[in-house]
Image (cartoon, rainbow, N blue to C red; front, side, top):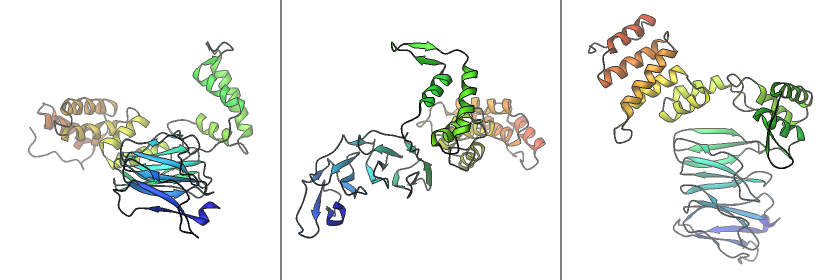
Length: 334
């Protein structure tokens, strides 16, 4: 293979913007310089040695033909520098990690993204595929590593289009127009029965069965072991604005997420969020309405009322203490 006889040389200093592929035996270059507009962080071969992927300060990763040094598609763009880029074990995909707080999976041949951004709360400095190519692990300056399921399916069977039309309630007719689907529930029931029979040997059917499961209790992805409630619980424990917003995206109206988010909004500097106090008030008020028997929600409501100088803080603290004596009433509250 090419990668056994060639190597990539990158200048030792990041200010340099070129790499080259070299013949190991002769020490001669075999390609034109692989040029970026900024310093280059990393470079690696595809598994078959035909391509090279590079990651750069110029906010892009690029995929090159190893023999000619010519790019095979458009740059893979991020909103900040790309710290690393690696091929999947089958060479089909590339994963990039960026200082814009995301990683992304791309189709290597077309250069098009095949995933939503894999988001962290800090710069992502590393991303790698698992040996089977089904998972990506990312490492971030937010003090976490995360594991993501990556879907790898062949062309979908016809019933997948039927499922999309039935669920959406519309189909496209021969003229390209939208036609309202009738008997939506009956169609979905038929498709569910069909995929149940195929699930043992059909990956599309397995994922469709996951799709049909109760969204509030199913696992976070088809192959994952963690359930949605467990994941929301983890995000609540992190207790950051980003993690609580994600918890609310997954579990809208979660009272504890609302109350904790309101408390954090109270602490935001006015320069960061001029509406922080009013948001804190609204969020914690909604939380106690949704969970009138939750002691922590009442205690957080008391902290917000006290912080914004509105009456009712003492009453909220007393309610929290009544529900759970672990929540003390502050001595300085009026």
